[in-house]
Image (cartoon, rainbow, N blue to C red):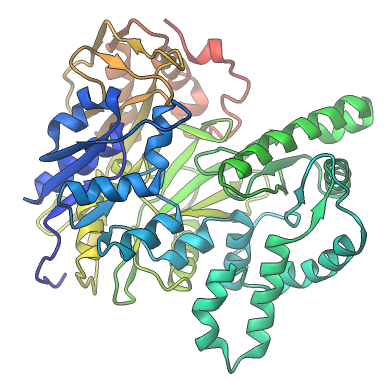
Length: 539
């Protein structure tokens, strides 16, 4: 790495909870100052206490404090009041919002993340699929995007036109948004064919209005051709807006009215995620029931250097597409497949021409062996430390991803990323289930002191957990020389963990870590798919 003169001195964490704590700790580790804005209940949080500069955030008219963390204007004003010169969005909330990144730059602040263009491309799963295909990376068979408004007739001439144009975009288009096209017209003015492809894809993305009933019948046709499906919102991250329908193809044969009802319910649920993103629309994807979910970590500087870490993360332990336990490396792929995924990830990020830290997600069909790209998360991941603990750079130091993000924002050139990946790491997300409006109090949270265990936790001195958020209060990470040692340490730590006062997922994780398919690494995304809320959250 080549040093540059630092311009960033105080970094505002535009987040709360665990991501805010991790940002502040990383900023302090670099000798810089950290700032934060907090709602009333978060002014007693650990992140607020750690920050060098702090200010309050108003509570929105909805009276939901979480809405304060997605108010762009309030966040920018808070960053200004605290004298910050950069903003780190963390994960969740505004971290993938291109408008937030644009406004940060207009305010004259550094945005510690990728370009607006990259956030736009990766912010829509349908647009990303087009980008992946142009990068030569396989994607799972899927439909086009369907935009519907309940109770309105979406057929007619517009329906027919967009169906025809949509085929062009789906086959060839790059999927630029309107803003994306304006950014590239200078580069494409002598390439009318490429511009037409981009335009066709954009029309596909933003048009194709139909009724809900028509979307249901389109789904039925897709199921008849491809088997069971997943219904997705293009704009949902972290599993939001994803509805799996295993067995739906057989149910259509056995009980068609019930099958149609389930399809309609899944479409409605996915579309609600789109509406929360101020958009609308869903699409269908072939369900790969027996799949391994794998991620490649990518680091790109502002000088066109793109580096992919040598070890992947295995994130196959999921419930409703939400990850719960992650580890690195995975036993689901061999050395040749690992290099294939690294090559795919590099092409996908290189072709978006952006700096930043990215996670490229893939599925492996454990029955057929196919490797497919799912999406890119252009931000910090909850599980980023799983990669850090097995990635060694320099004088055998582990890689630190948040400081790397800050270095990139500062303009540091990374011509080479000499690193060695060795050992094994595994992380468990500790979740609690508290009342949405009142939150809840832990009576105890202790983790035994075991070699190779790191705990990152979020609650205040009174052990209070506010409601209205996802209930993710801690991460417990274990490292070892191999998977057996790392998983053994994590199991020992979780077995000895005392978490009382609120229902939580510790016992659930312990029970399932003991299963042979987890022990040998053969578990897939259906590993705990039948678990209920009562199974997951136990007192």
